[in-house]
Amino acid sequence: MHVSGEAQPPLPHAVLQALEASVAGDEITEAWSRSGSRGGDSLAHSWAPVTEVRLRLVTGFPVLRLLPRAVAGRREVLAVPGRDGEPFFDADERGRPSTSVFAVFHLPPELDWRHAAASSVLREEVTCLYAQLPSAGRPWPQSVAQRLDRFDADGSPRSSVTGDFTVVEVDGTSVGVQVDRSGVACLGWSIHRPFGGAGQVWNMTMLTRGSAAEAVQVVREAGLLR
Image (cartoon, rainbow, N blue to C red; front, side, top):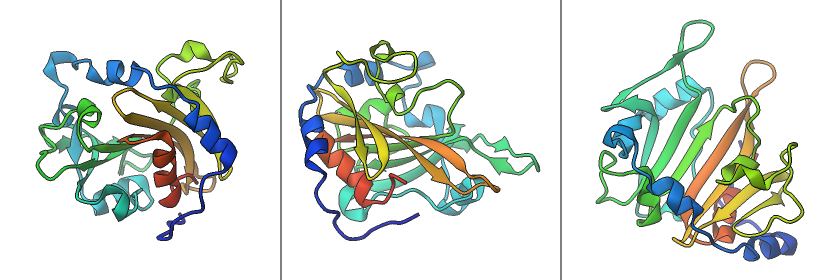
């Protein structure tokens, strides 16, 4: 994976135009503000922190990171599915621990990960980066949008689609971008990582506060679009 410590050139004008044309909606707020079942809306309810060494062992590649300047002043928490601090792992064909989902949370120093919620990104300087091996039949990056009825059967946006969601092409990668009135941008894209002979495709989602253009530039500068 290429990670650049230098600022990338500005996004192409056509990409900026498409992102600036997005009209913020309420769908991210509505989706992320719903309480979880059994009162489990905290990260501790469904995630457990792991070390960098362990996460690399169960995924097979280096941790996906944003550049330090993009998350300055925040604590990084690496996590896999779990409960009460206890991680849940799958097993690969050799019986070794593995995972099909992981997350990288960037939290303000005063926000304990056990008290943070998925919806914390709506009101605090929280950035959430999620990675998941794709499920069959799930369109990507279109599935980042909360209303899938805005797409034709093949996953392509309908010609009449307007509003808070768009798909842009950045450095050869399709990126789904959704914006919300709360000031949150949600991105969705896919990356390839080595695994066996053919490699694996991981679906990525990032939620962060800021404009759509800022969010896209953050993942671009970190080298996370490939």
